[in-house]
Picture (cartoon, rainbow, N blue to C red):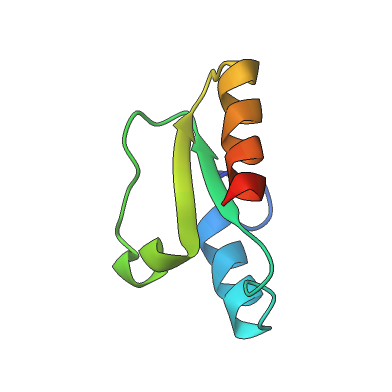
Length: 71
């Protein structure tokens, strides 16, 4: 999930995912060009498994996704 998207930012998207109950079977990894995540929405932290900064290494992203299936 990219934090800065054109029509709806990542935070708003996560809120909608949670409101619709779609977060139960989905894992959210935040992706952003920012070095540090802006945790202004602390209530959403519990829904985010990882935070990866851009540009990211494809292998790191792949390892992150694979780790979800092994847990």
